[in-house]
Image 1 (cartoon, rainbow, N blue to C red):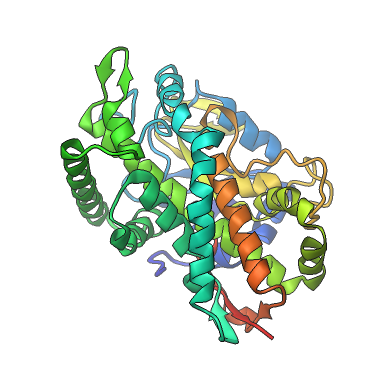
Image 2: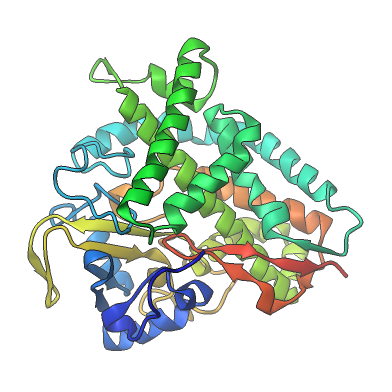
Length: 402
């Protein structure tokens, strides 16, 4: 991504989650802040706070009195109290506050239970095999662009019942919403208008021809005997597209990045396939891709920090997962880590509804990759690039197949 902001001078007083230094390697930044400034502040984006310990991140995540989820992506377009529809928010349930959040989440739960997720596994496995078959005979490929980025896009497109050929459109929307956060408010508004128009067209098509997919499920769902509004359906579909693709794509890429550099872990996973589920949890902990955001709901003092109503606050779950007070040797990847209550899927009432889907995709993607390429390595470590913003993962990942 192109960063329009000046370089960061001091991460404690001037941090920017879109800075190239953060994208390339945020772990030393967080480690430094834990020691000298566990709640950093920046005037960028109109005022933003950043807690970096597991304890502080947890405290914010569980506090729905002082923090609202009405907007979860920090950008130059900071909403005022009248800009977002309360209590539902623009992308329910992640932008919904209590008590409405619990009602919406309960309505959605049947679509994300183990049964529907298991039904998607054969499609996911066949997709992974097709992608890998297309690389047959090559000694060099990009594990991000040739493999990881395609899996969650195609799975979510199928889940929502959208045309499979629209995958490239999805990737463009994701980049604009999650990475191009330093655009002006007008540019950002134009992007969101285009996204809404795309979703409205899909809703209209499904209203005419219902089928067995999540879009039709939402159009038929009721809360309190009332059908969901079109805005509600659109917002939830947008959430699933944004939250269900870039996050999982990043997690798959990061796991492959790790394995490309650690032959001992590759060999162990090959020798102990029963270890895969535990390994997946460890990859999620060590390379958690998602940082969420909150808006301060009202003025209050947070551990000596004067938070003001409307301030942004970033919730870096990846930083919480690297806190030595919460995890033993947090910077070491242990495939058999027994105690691993990580925060990769968030904490509190907004913990990721799609965690079962993400776990399945990551597990299947790794199983199929290792079955095809049990031995691989980074072609050029310096050529690996990472996304900036609130979802971090490899965007280019050149590997060599010996």
